[in-house]
Image (cartoon, rainbow, N blue to C red):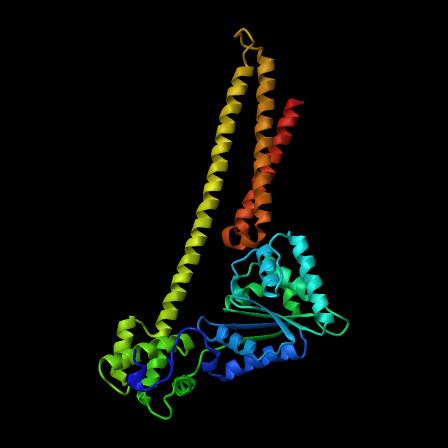
Length: 399
């Protein structure tokens, strides 16, 4: 729409990842260097993380454009997959047809392909974007695949790229073996304000602006304040600002034009949006904890209700045993013995309930410090001891 107006050859701020427009900030340059190192030196795992819109996918496309024909690459961009679907996706990327095979056959098919390709001097690379969506079971499959190696080098080189949540997943105890295989790990940070200025100028030059100033210098702090230095957000704001300038017949984007674009997008400053997002996530997590607490309370309530029902039925059974089959009261000595035995049964069942509660507490040992203090546990032990003493005294009386 505004290309002719600003004498540009291409749209400078498209959202679609385009490696030709990639701005190599210090962080992007380091991330790419790590990926190059892993492949050229035939190393193992590399993990690259970054916020949404930080340029991770564009960086991957840049890396792929530089591979020669000797490198065989499986690129996985859809990661909402189970183990079987993931293996199928990898095999399809390598040019195989895996859809009628079971999981064991898929593993064998992939292992055979990797080994045969390696023997043909091919370099094999698996790149997974949006890897934060991978389940621990799928990550475990990737670890097993990465275990294919010769005495000197890995057969399959793996690059996992994802949002910061990927780090949380990898740091979990169940993935300790996978984490030990990670050779390089790097986070792509947001652009600084000077880098934001250079980023905008770089993309405008790539689009054909030459040395012309299209964004005035005083717009940069405002753009940085509302984009947080995230490339995708910079693109969105700058593209909207160019459309506003075109609509107002302005050849240079000034501060008031950027302000108008911000109003159209209905944006808050980036730091405020992050704060609100964090508060919302905390509220959701808190609500989940409350739901779990309510569920625990309901479980205890149901247990107590079951105990009351059980006691009522037991009382009915005791009452029935006090009468003969013809409705006649049993002898006093027999009735006394029944009363003693029923009391002992009651105490033994109380002991059983206490033991069950104790076991439940021990099973939730990680939560004892939060929900159950020492005083409550001591009280539970005292109850247990008291019931045992009552049971003993009942046994002595019975004798």
